[in-house]
Amino acid sequence: MAASEWLRTFVAIYRTGSVSAGAAQRGLSQPAASQQLALLERRVGLPLFVRTSQGVEPTRRGRQLHAEVADSLDRLEPVLAGIDGGAVVTPDPTIRIGSAAESFAAVVLARIGPDSPPLTARFGSDQVLLDLLEHGELDLAVTSTTPSRRSLSSTPIGMKRFVLVGPPSLVPSTPAGSRSELGAWLTGKPWVAYSSELPLTRRFWLAAFDRPFGGDLRLVAPDLRVVVAAVARGLGISLLPEFACADALARGTVVEVSPVDDVVATEPWFACIRAVDAGRRPLNRLIAALLDAGGQ
Image 1: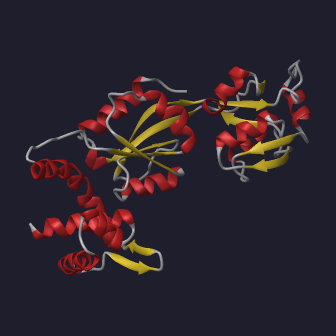
Image 2: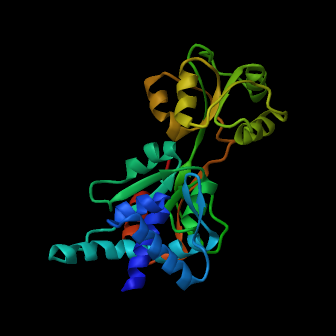
């Protein structure tokens, strides 16, 4: 019994990043939480945290231990709370889901309903989300890349199409008659992008025009919503996922410059989980909901 209490305190400290905050979450004094952590570290045989000026950071063994015990403790907490209150209750556990903020707003929210399991969202890049998933800090990650790690598995849940868009004030009403005319028109035009590396945009220019990127990069903003707003305000052209600019296209605040499906391939969405969680029913229900709604 003592070891389970130590683990509950460990998880609280891990998630709050502070011994004092973890102690408060557990209803303990800081000395009591520190003692429980010290006893657990003695049992494990390795330090689980390193102290920093901001609190504590988990060691590699700390991350491993969290991945091993956190999910089981999360499932146990409602039962323990019910016992403490005089009745055993087993509500659906909260699922910790990660994605890019823009795709969560435009894609994930559109595919879940009132009967979905409780969710806690966390936002980040694919690499960050897959790291968090592997370390047990997420239950599911929606990404544009499939994980190469053997500890993770993925399910395709849809496709992402790209469109070349610009502000109505800049885009001519008559589209370019050929690919070479489009390349000539785009050369030197102001451009807005999500990343200064322009990986997709550079591939588009090479595939479509057989030349390096020739636009005038005027704004880089790592948020697709900002990029769409910048295009609508006349700051430049951009190559964007359709889900990010669908509303703006419908309103006419941005317009499609030219179809690019023949040179910019669609990309899949993936729902990624830890392989050991493949049998968790709430996770499988959520993946089914994301899959049933189709892809953009």
